[in-house]
Length: 254
Image 1: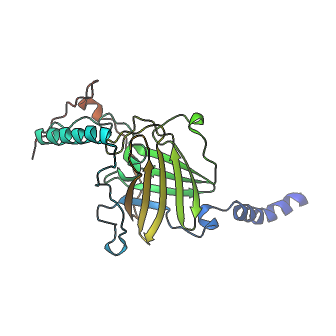
Image 2: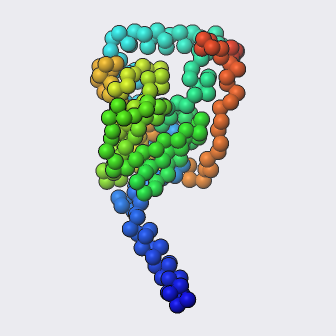
Image 3: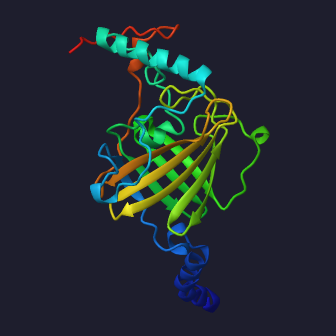
């Protein structure tokens, strides 16, 4: 009985010790302030006083000539289809996840949440309820050891208050801005705050077979301190497209 009382008395101190020894990314590296809920910003730089000399998602991708011609033709067809009120079917039409890197900047009005825990950063995108895991201080594996997926395999490390992330293994059917890629595509991110409530994700996409140079894009986010993430399940769009990918959705042109 005496031993139980001693153990009960010591339990709070033991728990505190375990928490201190376990630590967390925020504790180990100073509070980087990237945790919480964020929404994509459509203003340049997110803050006029903190705008970098970086490319924006609207710039044309640096595709090699043989791929650029196909991509430009696809954009032309998409514009014509939109003008007719018959938009082309996309992966979103089939309720498929956006995958990487589109999920980081392609959520439109849907926010994302960044969760920090020991050994891992988890990013939850409200659009399509996408979940991405970034394993901290873990060696990256080879492509032979990865089952290609929508998000690939992401490993990260802290450089001060910047989260540097390496992602490989995104399957070839996943597209960002309709740009093709090979399984050798590699995505590097530098995620950090530039203002208390402004977050940047500086993305560099490398795929030498498709791109003539690294493709750099910066996604900018504003903090949503009071927002509670909601459930978003895509289940209604399937009726708008047939097996060939042709859309049956009719939208009256403006």
